[in-house]
Image 1 (cartoon, one colour):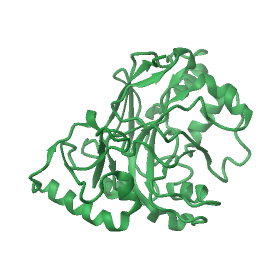
Image 2 (image 1 turned 90 degrees about the vertical axis):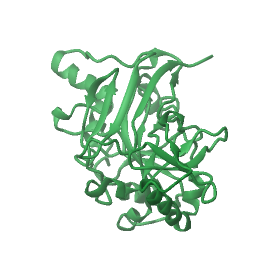
Image 3 (image 1 turned 30 degrees about the vertical axis):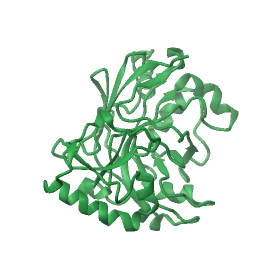
Length: 328
């Protein structure tokens, strides 16, 4: 099942069910007006949404309309909680090396995680505003999950049942600010503006055998101005799984329905898979050539992130965004 939130003038958008090919959609106000409402009442709402999905894919919905991803907001245009981990240790090593920081002492025993901005989340085709190119603008290609209500103290073995939807994410980063902000010891604030998400969120069964309940084993593609920078496999080199991330986040508190949890920039140790962000590419170029060759993003640059199944079909829809100068 694939779900999207169409721009409607309301802050939380209007929930629609989207077909497998991402070409047709149907509104479901009689079932759930918003995705947040659906997640709040998932046990009763999901079977009804799934029935609409089956009818839509069978061509049996007379009220279906053409789905335009450009008109979609983020699946959750705003969320009660957004947590982002860093479980691809290869990326963590390079990102820290880039800013001259050591690995944390417990990096192999518990995942790194921060609580990020969630009151404004960008759609897959929204422009992405930055106040200056001097911020060293970077993207991070990630995969995020959406949960239902998660009890405090949930075990990793039980946490997989709380994963309801999966979506792609671009965790935009101002690298120039991380070097001064993180040493303060309170985590990201200014260096992590609003994230962007794929036009649809999908139930894990949409990935077939590529989803094992804990990891998704498909390549995550990223492009800058049409040039491919990376295609790392999201399942490879993932040190902590999504259930482990949920258990870590819920150790001392419950997680409300609609909590978004990212796993960090997807990164493989196999150099042939490229990079999931510009910072990684620059670290490798520094080591090989003595100086970075890949530039940070500039105004007007375009970033595309996509994930395709074995047949080449985009599963969640692509993020295709332009970096722009923020209005004063």
